[in-house]
Image (cartoon, rainbow, N blue to C red; front, side):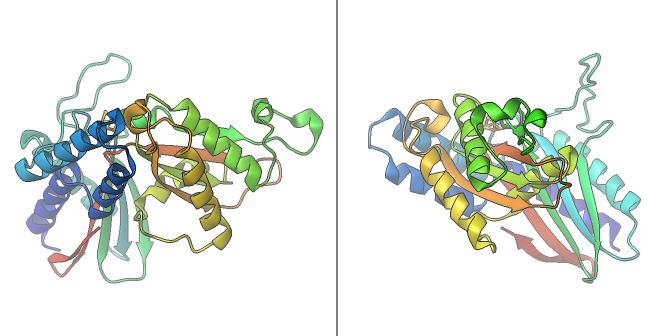
Length: 302
Ligand code: SF4
């Protein structure tokens, strides 16, 4: 493997992700603008967001002051060292902080002291998976803190009355109507926070950790992707439609553009649990990726 070239590629991936929003996201925000009444606060807010996106792209500057938690999803062919890739990513983050593509964002949780270089215990987040293909695929998401704070997890009540828990107040049962109620409740509670318009990643099932993890992974899908499960596809469309009728609008100022999309997946669970986990992504929906083979980039993603 060409070590220097791969390091440079990680730095370029970080620059692109922080400074240049993917086409599907920009098109979706532009679609929201067309849907708002000209001269309304919602219209002006979306115009400002689009101008911000344009300036960031032209000047290679971060589009938001919070450059977020870097979350990497990496697929590797058999035989490539994960430790080696980890070290390169950490080095690329330090370079990116120096080049101002990233804010030095990592603090010691107990002391609040900024560690300066953008890395630390648990940072960045890297998910590895071995695959049978002969190239490396990397996807990076920069996950803002404001929108991360409004993520939510619901534990739907067991049909056994005695085991009902706090989420039973939504009258949400273990079915898709229950899931719909949870998601709309989370969107409603997020209003005015999390920098709408947003995109919702949802996982139905799993345990507490795997469920949250899968809900975030849903956000590596492009907004144009169609859910292969027709039932979930229908639910995604219904929720997006209903959420956009709540009147929350861009940045919570009112309007028709509250959500740009909903992505729902499902993983298995045990009978005792039924989790609905929701990851909220703000308008700064920063995800980029590349495929890498033979010492060079085969393809940039998104
Ligand atoms: S939620 Fe998103 S847009 Fe809002 S401050 Fe955080 S990263 Fe920026």
